[in-house]
Image (cartoon, rainbow, N blue to C red; front, top):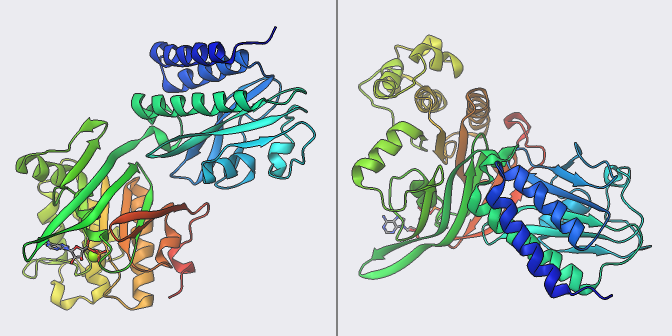
Length: 405
Ligand code: ADP
Ligand code: MG
């Protein structure tokens, strides 16, 4: 008897919704969805791949059938799963087709002999991963492929809504979500849109670079993330809670408790010593480091009593980094921190910043117009004319000492 594809589709949609509703963790919900999908089609094998944005890799969270994908880790863009997640497009290989898109480790995982299908888990806010399905011998019909891609879209929506936070890897710790953020300025009576519908997720422990030409809107975006200014339109979530319309007091409190700033012009207080500049900030912090410890971290213990005027540019920026780190913020926002420094000093400062955030488990968001610096980041957001033109991952971020400009 020919199975009714509409019935299978509706039945699977219903099961997916139910699975997410009743699962204790999002990961359990995902695995249950995979199981329903494999039963419904039916197919012999299935797996769910997720993307870890902070580490730039892909991993399998759950599996059906006799393949051995669980535990496998691919670099971004690697293999069939990497290709599907990168392009956000379905990939279908008929039984007997060349399996060239597969990486060696995918081939060796014992995938079934029949058809293989990968459908991306994506929403307008990004691609979380993909679902992979395989049969022992038969092909997937076009209707089945469509069914799978629609079910994947629903699963991605559920992931988005119910909290990717429950998953292992980088998605577990989402700090902030910006959704369709726009910013208008009025210039001589004329309204200019400097940010246009920017959507972005920010994760714990990641090093994110915002790259773009001068005037593209980078600092405006950073200042919105840091709650220095409000967007004209759009939604902001902090820890999943709406923070789109904070009061002045809430903005101040958010900056105090969560953000460390590093600016191109250092912005140290000229009348305070290096140590006092740090203390000035740590005095009002909830969980500060010792000022001396912060200075040691940037290699300036012997400059504690120097005033900014007695320090070189590079040293002043290191004090500014110590000051930002010392309050133990969740995020450090750095706006062109090396633009005023020569290349050697710039690399030194970047190395210190990179090391400090890594040791402290802090998220670092850095604005730069220098594409070379972007190679240090886990993830690079290219801003062009107030929009995110491109996002890319660095599977293996470079050390500051490896950069040249
Ligand atoms: P970037 O940091 O990429 O150089 P900005 O975010 O500083 O870019 O600025 C983007 C655009 O917005 C620029 O054209 C700039 O002139 C304009 N702009 C920035 N801040 C203001 C402001 N306070 N008032 C009016 N225009 C502004
Ligand atoms: Mg700027």
